Image (tube, rainbow over the protein chains, first blue to last red):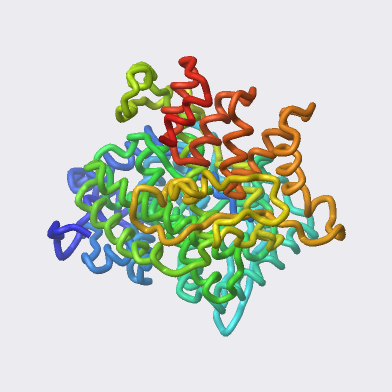
Length: 61
Length: 521
């Protein structure tokens, strides 16, 4: 599409916490909240300023 | 801790609408982690009853944290319905959620709990839809089964034959009205699964510099934020691919029409998004891959009569959207008109009072009806009117611009003439319904000053426009009392002018006939 060069890997700002239990997550945030700061900020933004549901597809002909 | 990541190859495949199972796994982990963080943020202790894999948990937890709901999540129920299907050893099962109190959190009004007969209709459509998908759209079927876990029946919308929605808080869930048939269900589920995938992608990667920039979307009548425009293109990528395969397999004119219509819309939308400079690097990569996927499709051969109708439908939507949502500044246009100069580039701004609106077009319905009845036939390959045509549009036909839809004028992707007549089904044996458009069209042209109702005259003009009979469009328009909103639409659809130019001139008092002459040169 363009001549733009892209990284070999796209790294998200979001930390993968999916393997944690709720207790482990609580421990982690008590020890060092900064590791999750971007993730929590993003989540907070989603909660305070949510997109509208994507609606309107008309599937019938 | 590990940050979520995708290789560039995987990210491009995701943008192209062909994510691998491992990519979906990564997106799902992101959503699982999001639900865990929501759970942690909730007041009270809901750890015991929380199912973080349930999309309705995400919807409920987000709503709870936004103070839109109160109390604990509902307890598990034993009477959960499922839709299940198996074909060619590939099985698929999703929850058909018609009772959970949280089902109203997906953005549409949920239907009442289904009767057994209603549930049986869903199951019948699901069975047939799965057979269709596995048989002819296997890759899409596998992706669907990987993403979708829950379907919530919702009330139908009076303005749409079928409606569906997806929430960014509920990965893998879709709200959908009663499917008309298996094909409608199949394509609707593919569409909504794309939204879920893009929602999960957008959680991990910022794609827009300002996702709230509003602009044109071919799929809605209201201005959409940039994020919504990309959502539309991504969802319709799957829809277009579906119809591409259906058209190639069955030759069905309706499938060909849908393919032709959406291939242009998706490619054009991706191009516009990329040209705005308002995407992040990840957004450019994603959207560029989307465009690369769809870019070859508009060049694929299709019946030129159907290509014509598809472009007419897209132009119709574009013009109606502009009329509805833009406010032009007429003064430079009027000044140019009185000087006899060519029109300057029009300027316009988004109206601030444009409300949310689903796409609704009577003309599109007319096209669907025509294709369904198979009554659209080529007429003017020789440039001659049909034998029983009351209309002499030879003057228009001598002008190459007049015989092509607007998107074909000005060079590029054209080819030969594509002009049509809506024909009788033969003799006197046709039903009243079969003749409706033709008779209205004839009546409007033969008796332009008779006491027709305004609606029937408008219908006659619409039919003439659909038939490519621009002579009748002009004559019916000139000096008549058609309303200003419809007038530029007709002219723009018929002769390719920009609607707001026309609207501005007409409103400023320029004689309609002179406006048309000015437009067509």
